[in-house]
Image 1 (cartoon, one colour):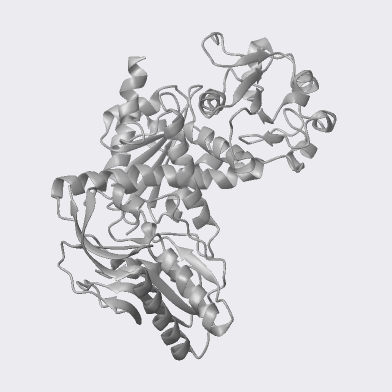
Image 2 (tube, each protein chain N blue to C red; image 1 turned 120 degrees about the vertical axis):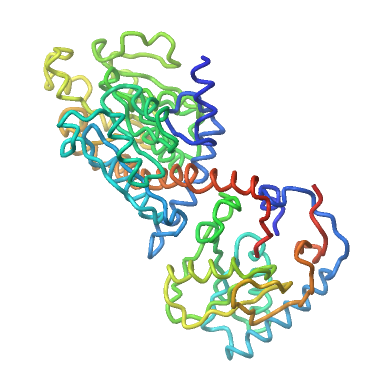
Length: 188
Length: 331
C-alpha cells in the first residue's frame, strides 16, 4: 500500500510497524522474472499484451514486469495505469487521490490485459478493476498478476501469476515498497 | 465576518457549496485537483463511473437556465446518480406554492442533494438552513455562482498552469452579474489580478472593499491583459436606462476583430454564455484560437462532477466509518 494512500485512509491512519521483511529487493526481482516467463509462456510471446498497473501500489510492479518482459522478448508491451477509486463498492472509505491517474490510451479490444497489483487481499479492488476495464473496451482476456497473495478473499477471484503466497492474519498489513516486502501491523 | 466563518464550516468539507466567499486558495485547489480525475473520465470511451450509484441529485431552478442545468445533470449522470428536475415555469409555483414547500416536496422524492437557482440573492443559503440535504448554489440573484467560478479557474489553470500573476479583465455588466462576484473572489484567491471594466452605471454601487482595480475603458489596457472575461449584457435590464443603447455599448466594449488584433497572442478570451454576438463579443472573437468558451462548457461538467462527488461521495460515508469502526483493509 502506498504511503500517501495509507496516510489518508481512515481505518488505518496510523503508523506501519514492520514485524518481518518477507522479501528483499532481489527476491522481488527474481519473482518478477519468473512471473514474466510465465506470462510469455502462457501467451506465446508479448505481442498481444497490455500491462495495466493498479493505482497506486500496482504501478511500479507493472513497470518492472514490463521492463522484464522487454528484457526477455525484446519487445516492450504497452503499459497503462488504472485508478479504481470511483468503481469501488466501498467508495468513500478510501480517498480519491488526485495524483492517482488513469492512463489507458491503448485500445484494449482483442488484446490480452495483464492486470498488476502489489497485494491481493479481499479481491474487491480487482472486482472494481474488472468493471472499470470493461468501460475501456473488450479485451480478449484479462489475467491477474500480484506481487503478494495474502489470502482472505471475499469474492471468487484468483490470480494467474503470484510473486509470493503469504499466509497472514486479517489484522496484519502487507507493505510492498522499493526495498522489499514487509509484514506488520498498523499502530495508532 | 462571522457569517463567512460560520458558512465556512458548512462548506465543501461539510455539506454545501453556497459561494466562493469564505473559501481560501487551498479549498479551491483541492476541488481543481480533483477535477483532473473527473476530466479523465470524460475522455473515456464510456464516460461513466458508478461512484454515486443510488444517489439522487435534484435540480431546483426557480429561474431559467439551459447550460447550468444540463451541465449539472450531465455531471450527475456520469457519476451514475439519478436526477430529478424541478422547473419553476411548469410547476405548482405558478399556483402559489412557496419556495420552502417546493423544496420539501422535492426533498421527499428521495433527493440527496439540491442544486438551487433563484433570482433572489441568498436563496441557496435559506434552503440550506431548511433541509438536511446538501445544497449547491447554481446562482442566486446578483450574488454568487460558485461552480461557474470554479470552472473558469480550472479552464485558466489548464491553459496556463497557474493563475498566479495573471492580469484578468472582467468586462461588462458587473452590477447584475453573480458570475463577476464569484470570479473576483476566486481569481484573486488563486493569485490573479482583476480589473473590472464597465461604464460607471454597470458597476455595483458599493465596490470599495473589492480587491480589484476599476477601468471605464477597455482599449487602453487591452494589450496588457492575460485574459478577457466578457459578461453577457443582460438585455432585460437595459430598460433601466443604464446604457444608452446596445450599439453604443458595443462601440466601447465589444471584443471586435480590431480589438482582438491588439490583444496579446497568448491572451485568452472567456465568456460564461450565452453570448450576444455583436454586443459584448464578435463572432470572430468567439471563434478565435484564443477563445476558450467551449473549453469552459466541457470543463463545467468535470468541475461539477468533482463538487457532487465531494459532497455526496466522500464525506458522509467517511463519517459513518468513524462511527461504525470495522473497516478492513480491502485489497
